[in-house]
Amino acid sequence: MENKKIKFITRTGILLAVALVVQMGGLPQPITGPLINTALYLSALLVGSWSGIIIGICTPVIAFMRGILPAPLGPMIPFIALGNGVLVVVFSLLKGKNKILGIILASLVKYVILATTVKFIVDVPDKIAQIMSLPQLFTALSGGVIAILAYKALWVIGIDKTKESLKDKK
Image (cartoon, rainbow, N blue to C red; front, side, top):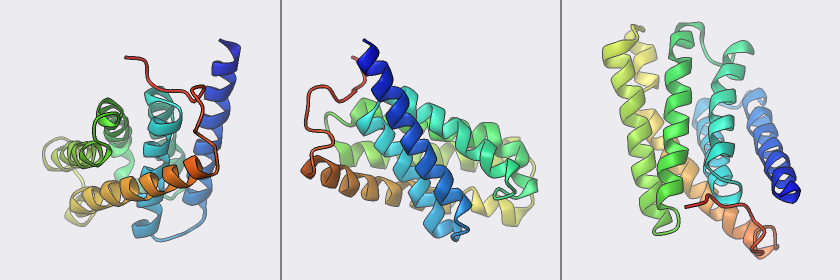
């Protein structure tokens, strides 16, 4: 029991640290977005849904506090966190059956949440609304592809070959 808790905390901490380093790196959004989504998908693969939900909540809050997320998007923080969490949960539910389908559906659901929010719930300028629409679908999809490649590489080097790796309980 303690071993699982330690792995959960350690792996979640490492993935959150990677996500934060990416955010602080000053890279353009077309690079940062997919890499943040990669951390979310990897958390589902290596740790479980709760890990991804934690990371998915922390990343938009910290991005806003550090000025990485533009001020007009402040009201979007809860919806970005929701989109991240739903992405992780949908992918987690499907990853055992078909990871590619899981990535596609999870990305679509996140996109719908964010696009619907800027269209009907949160009033933001049109240019900002565009950032929360189609680009989010592409960053989620590409983050999923990167995550699958990274997961396979981690498997090859033995990071996730044991039955001890944390998985979501069904």
